[in-house]
Length: 298
Length: 275
Image (cartoon, rainbow over all chains, first blue to last red; front, side, top):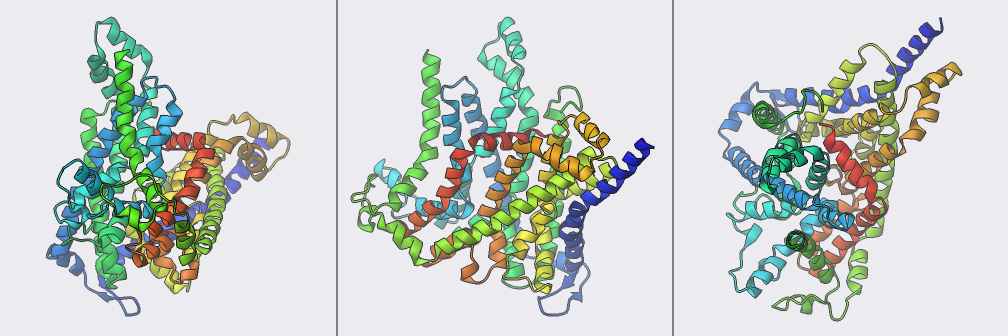
């Protein structure tokens, strides 16, 4: 009897305690998700009545130059920012993994930029990029090098923002460092016993053992970077000449500046589909290079 | 030996560009305009212009923004920690049919870009007449974090699973209810995980920009983030003030980090290693 009573108790409390999470999912995730799909099939401005237009918004997208511009600007930014951040973070994590003295101090230094609130970060970098008195141009002039226009130059704007985003590589680095510390020492010893040098240890132990961590950081990086917004909103307003018209910023403008809620919802769903597709491709491609020690061990 | 020297040289080579923006921020925050525009740049303020801070922080009610941000952050942290723990307890230590399916469905929500839910959620709050209140910024956190907050449920669940189940069984034999087991047994043993969730929720709320931008219109309701953005658009060339205000917004977070460093690193590691 006691066992049955216990089961019943757990079942009742189990459901009860899951209710807030389930409600949250329905109200703030599933509900809005369906609603935005429905909205994307309408022409709707806040205050008016939605008019059903079928796939109209989606066909309109195909002819929208700014949509393609925002897609290419965002892709460009992602293709630059993610690999650069991964390489820098991995390199610094490798350095920190060499039994460095004062590890907490070094780790803190490299982690610090990650802590800067997004807007303070943006304000700081506007000043760093300032063509007349900013840090970058001051240093370049001092070194006798030509100064640049940075975020105020159509061709330099995205690369400048990539530099800025690389500054915040701390999270990625900490995850890499934890991964590196988990690589079994005996594998390194085995390579040394076989007469392998540092390069062999790196190439045949570190890299394969780190592929799951690299993969994780890659996926998280791509998904996050593709939704970049603050820099475009505060720093560049999408300019110059739409060079930094990032996708979510364009969507925001359509929805909350031009009140084209239907069209913006279509943009949102296209973004969703792109992210699903990219994630799917990354996972499918992962089988070729990500090394899992015993399937399912992680 | 030579290898060690090279190693530390490489670390310094990495640390300099990481720290220079901070130095630039602080020196600009403490400089007079006239000194700031000298070429080549000077690095030591002369004199130290502390009044940049008082001027900037009183030009707009930053004290008010600070309080607003703290209120939103505290309500969000309380809601997230409490409801995410409750859900995580149910998903890890209570047996009920459909549990794992429900959990998997909830977790799938993490994949969804925030842009997809943005518009309907905004419309919903508008219909409820809650625009220009803190409700849209705080209420979701009382539903197990809603949206991306599910990651907290995941993190707590993983932690709860490491606590011996014998403790629960002993308590049940003594006639305890599941709530009592949750509150008196599991929660007190989960402090590290709870601190991690607290820190990340706090930082997330503190740094949130888009949320307050969409939902708060009155200047007196602004958070630090949008307060700073609006300050930036007004004092666009007053670099001393801008840097002082930015430094003031950054400082609390950095202070928090120094006190809770261990948990930060553990938290980042915990969320990253799960895959």
